[in-house]
Length: 243
Image (tube, rainbow, N blue to C red; front, side, top):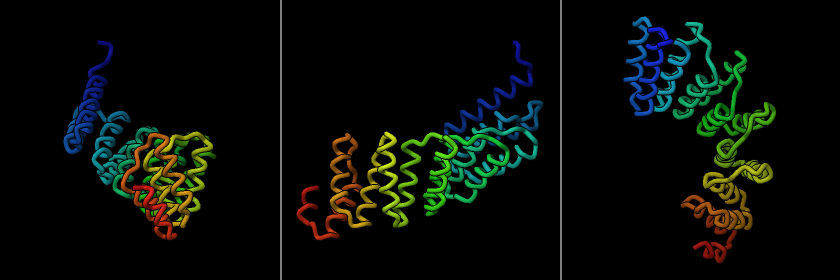
């Protein structure tokens, strides 16, 4: 075999941790990581990535953060995979400040942020009610030539809509349409809810029709928001049209 014993052990340990992560067994992944640290196979970037990703999948942001700190202390190089896993762990727990901190660390260390990085950070800000930060991050994607997608737009729109910034949410929806980014149910929900907040019943109905025509199945949120938009403006006949 071309690989040395240490290299083989490192690969084996990392594969085992990845398997545990996929099964939601983050505790077992960390046990394997600690056994690895005590063996001849010292953890490397790939091993740290596997351990952090296992914690991320279960929302264990504190463990993920501790592993990231240990990686930096050991002076191992980290990459976008490392940071994305740590940021996603924070996003799942709604720790937007921590997520932003990891993004800043990436910039300081000249690690290129990608679409996954920004999406997770924007979602963290959306969960934390920080619409301004979500909007700034969305703008930073364009400035950094990082491709936006449905998740980026949906999370930013939701952040704006949930905080009463309906004009900004609708503007983002129009940006999506011009950029030919595919809308999904979350996107339409945010846009129609924004119309309800802004009293734009006609636009809400138009969006609802477009949603149906684009084969995106309306859900409870989109229907309720469209009915609510009509109801608030006394357009009860229009509201009945949705049933």
